[in-house]
Image 1 (cartoon, rainbow, N blue to C red):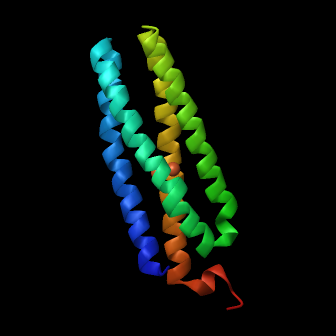
Image 2 (image 1 turned 180 degrees about the horizontal axis):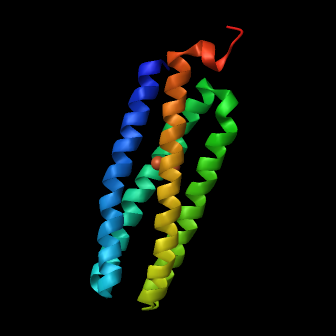
Image 3 (image 1 turned 45 degrees about the horizontal axis):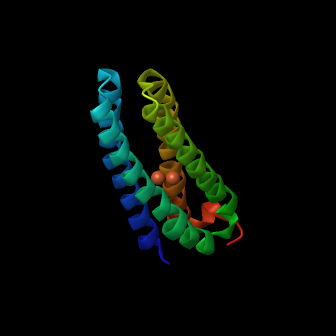
Length: 144
Ligand SMILES: [Fe+2]
Ligand SMILES: [Fe+2]
């Protein structure tokens, strides 16, 4: 894997984050409207899109980055642990929706949305940092 591969992973991940924002927004609106049908649709959509994104990072991007940059393995493992937390939060939201408890689902959703927003920022910062290491290896390793 080369510098351009890292850049393309960063671009793809950032692009997906922007795309996911619209699914978060759809569900937030449906929850705010207290519309159970729209909430179910919005939740199904968000679950599918988010799972696709998380599993790509878990199974494709992060194992590749981890092999290339073993010194960042711990950071990547933290990201993967966050993914599992998001999955549990989605399950809890789904349970509240199933029980017709939209306000409680909404409260859990806001926790998920806030946690995911922070996660995205960390991922994008981390990936930009990896690019910088490539651009100026001397800064990352003064002995080289
Ligand atoms: Fe992630
Ligand atoms: Fe991500």
